[in-house]
Image 1 (cartoon, helix red, strand yellow):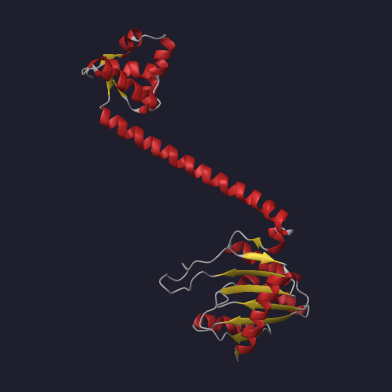
Image 2 (tube, rainbow, N blue to C red):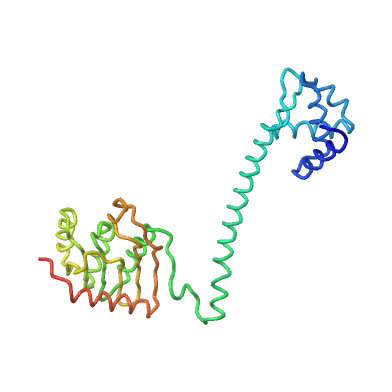
Length: 274
């Protein structure tokens, strides 16, 4: 460093980066000793108490500014320790941002319902209850079928989750519940599944569309479980990788009416599967 002005500038920059006065003093002393310095000499030569010197030295080692070798201390090359320092700060900031994002999302989920309830006079959950996963959607579908006493309408495609609701469908049929199922039987596996569903005595029709983005189960016009696909499988994405919007459950009459009207229209336009 060139003169007192240069030393003062370096000290100021290191303090601004978060290093302590004691850490700076010890590191500067080692900069002038290419061969290193015994640990005891560094501690006794520091212009601070023994405890502060030990604490500062430990911190320097932890932060990567000082190497310890054979009971001697050596200053790490500035380019090396500053690179490590920046990377550590990047990681800390990244974790901090993730924490802020997580807490913000949680806060939003708590505040937004209250905000809109006071302005619209209705709770968001009274309109739509979000479900966390397809697995939860399947469990809720079983409950909807189990609660039904008159009719269940199912909008599916391959009906790949039939086995998960098969037993509940059988019990519902024994109670006299009528089923209407819309499917797209275009491959051998789905055609075979259609045969298995028909064995239960369920009314199935072939949907008239090549693809329909809404899947759902409606029970007695009172409970609806549904999801909306954002894109079709095979359209630029591999099978099983197409994206969908979060599944939901609702008892809202308006939402149910929209689904039911669309289902009835599609049912009329669909063809019977013999």
